[in-house]
Image 1 (spheres, helix red, strand yellow):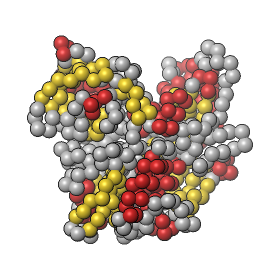
Image 2: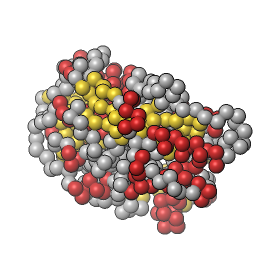
Image 3: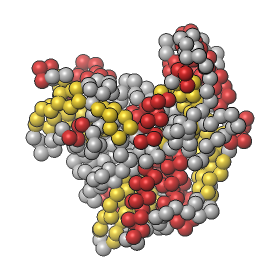
Image 4: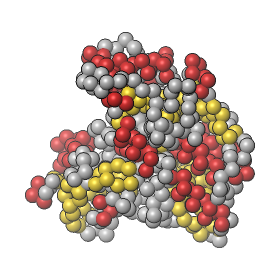
Length: 498
């Protein structure tokens, strides 16, 4: 696995993810590029209250940032740790200068070692198991994706379902519009409760056919299958041609086998034109991104895949990655990537990696991506269950292109503007973004993603949650993933997850 050991005494976990998530290549974390099993720098030895006091944890975090932060000149070490009541607030103050330059938009954060390891090993988390999008125009809440093995799907909530009201019982249901009027988006998020297993919520829901019902859903542990059992991959027939379609939800280790199965199916059918749907994918392990790139590029074994570069003082950890043989890989001749403002980190790495090799045959379809050309490492204070995800590396493709902090749309070879219509299931050839992707693959012209759409896609970022404009192209803040006030690790990786 890439980046398994970056220093003699430190097993760093690298991770690439959305706004706060990780993506790495090995080890204990995520956020930008990593696997979920390694442990990183470990300090604190006793597990006593003094060892895990806020002051001690703040001092530890400052030391790690001074040593590893990718932008040392943008680290404000003058801030007073005594002025902050939480470790994350202190970290936010330290990296505020980099955030002001859009180089660290909540990518550096502290999370739970146990929680992150569970997520990266199997995609395990707790909740009702849906991705939610809030329509700021209609003040309405919708399910934009549902996980098949989670409680909400079993209760009838799926893509396109509107959540009209939320309560702890039928007696105290409050409409979503009233919640928003009383306390904004935080009131809507708070009404859903935390991710504690056993928490029950009652929902009044409206289906796309206008049927209204009331259901009770109890939160439980479930696995976030990286590829849906319904639409994870398929072969779409259109105009006499066969197109491969693959929808990856998140870059966790269990995705490797699922992706290999998908591409083996494409290979068996002679498919070389592929739609890669990453519209809600906030990132994950770099190692999985490399697997994905290898599966698309059977003909490029031995060629440069991408470059990983650390700050000058850590340049011994720099790495050049090369394409390698992968069972089931195809030699893709034309690729359409579907993205939105929730598409970040490892997702963008796969897109950027493909760019030099298909300069006239690769496109970004949908909306502009988030813009995260950097990755995290995971540094552990194990006795306190603290994992500090630190922006420590930059990512570049074979042409050394990597400064896409404003998203990929402005620099991508071709872009096709398209909406994300939740009245169609993901994987449906008639869904507008998929239809536009098929159009590009078949050689049709399209309307480029506009700058207004690009800016709207990253209009709102709060507490490490990714904002996304996933409605009609160009409609700023029309529908965005619902933000949790204090996001769990999984919510950092999967915008809108509850």
